[in-house]
Length: 498
Image (tube, rainbow, N blue to C red; front, side):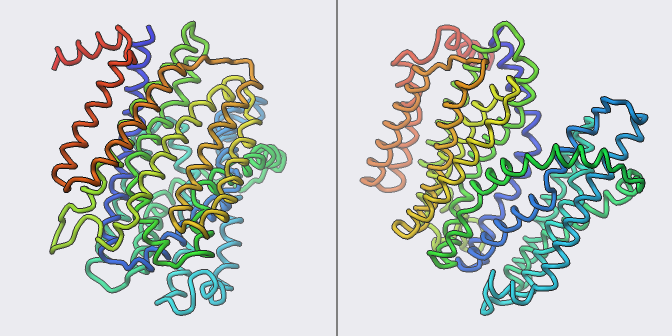
């Protein structure tokens, strides 16, 4: 039964996403701290440096994480006993990361004075120390990438999730302490992250030492390197699509404007969490069920439900974020400082982009099923280029709103290209386009109606109107025949059980 499998998928989604959601939640709680204890310009520097961190973390791994996942449990030639073989795979992956990360860190430290002046600015307080601390964060993060991957491969899911969550909570706690009790400012943000990364590395150090094999197998290394290298363009494109806008923004707008953009982009985190949870569960689900007799209608129905649930979350974010930012927290401070409210429109645009990116993830399933993954870098690469070009066009005209629109254009392009490339594979899924277009049309009507009416009433009346519109959205879909009889019966049973 499709309904039973969808319930199973929903259960998997919850299991996979719980710790990830908690981690994202703790990170999200830093947003009011950043907005109340850092200036907009300082937040701009934080955003810019974190975008560079993401690139550095990716380059240090250099595709070896993918190779580790592929080779660790696949001793196809049975050259070695299993544990010996796995130890060699672990060691080759780890040594590659150490060499690349170590050399990169050494060079960056060596030239840290001129680089800090170029990247951050000589006039920025503690620019050199900020830059030097940031240099070490990706190194320690990547030194635990392979040990964490080993936990996942050996099905120590709970241990993996707890360690990741502990790392996030520790970093958030340290940043909270540094921002509220010291005058370190931006330096405190990255110092807290560095300490958390270092402590996690120390925790893994005994296990790392136990798993190292200093007898280098050059043949195996060549196989792993050749496998991992082609993943670089695809992964680099995906990262560029997510964070390339921050460095580009530095060319056209001030650090303060980048800071406003960054804080408001964080308000779209609920959608990012939703999409991430879906992604965690989606791949193992479709790879387990694609041979089932009813797999194709099942996958089609899941996309419909994903878009429906995402559309409700999109309306909640766009309708009520202006109330969330006004929530009082302590000492007369609000959840987001009023200096940042001018950029609230950014959150809705980016949330929509995240939602569309989840659709792209759904479309990508057919390429994995048909073993035609060579098409994935094409879609991701082109969408990244479109997003970057759009930034250069729209940023000078619209400022930071242009950056948000460029991100949306990039994600939308990726979705369209991914769908078009599905014609290249034999595994065809007939999506429920009629129902999907119902969602898009009805959601658009409710969104623009809410936006129009809220401008004509005070916050209290507008809040009541928006709550009513959320229910009206679901009622409108029912009126248009969106819900099947089976779905209505399931909803009825659910409320009867309640």
